Length: 437
Image (cartoon, rainbow, N blue to C red):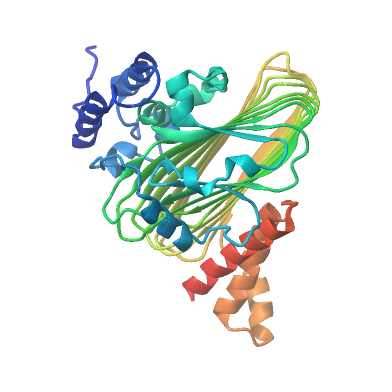
């Protein structure tokens, strides 16, 4: 049987032309970029016949490729950050990016907290910085077409090194404020050295009405004995097609907790690739997604237990209103040597109407025999008895539904240790419910 070759879409053709024009102008090694784009180009935009993208057909969603954004002026960057609201009330060290470019003027490098080093990625690529050798720590991510596209075009970002106990949170703020549609490809590398601890906040937002196309990657390497709290919020604009990847590599005797809260974007896909690379490590990855109208929200997760005696917990809660579509794809991988693994994964969705849809695909890939692993998925409506109970006590239906939704999502949010961040997430849930009416 002859091989079938898909014709290039207008978006794929535009990306190829953009890469040819930009590859020698972007900082860093041209050959590594060319290799990444060659891998992407050979497969093209992933479509529904690609198993990992069965429910999120990027070939169909991305009809036209937006031009990559240029660096904003200082005035434009300041105005964009002033208008940004996600997690704005949480006191933290701001590390901002506007239109895909690091806003260096917003960071006082001479007054950074003890234990924090920040190197702009553009400078690091130009100087071939030593830390660059630690990029792409997770093979599962490196083989992903969305990640390869970011690698091809990454123009800016930062590398952050954390040593010791850092009490003040770090806030990575990704803001796209261009009036017309633009694409971004920002890369952040966070190195948490052995024994260090840090709280990392991450917010993504853009202006409504423009078909922005962010494709941002955050890579985090946590050494032995580390403690990391990670809180991420997707509040992208109502027309955005938002792609994001988080690659996590964690050492021994460590604790890594992460949550991703989604309310924004017309189409979003957040990918998490995690490797537990040392014994006795505890990983928690949670998600709370709230979709309405015709939104499409995809949470994809791969967790590899590459060392024995590790524990992982994954809990994803999704609220579907209107004709929105939710997607959860999760896989736990346990190789033959990772004995005493304890991995549990759960996806639960609530449909508030009859027009929405939820696609669940949890998987276990186990080659060890002394493990405790389980997965589950549920999808249904709010409990009619509880709803009736609240309404019988005088609450209007919408208020009763809101209380039940908050209780449903609360299980995914409550583990966040930073009180201000937890309150900000609760406010995000309440804001979504209020906008719903």
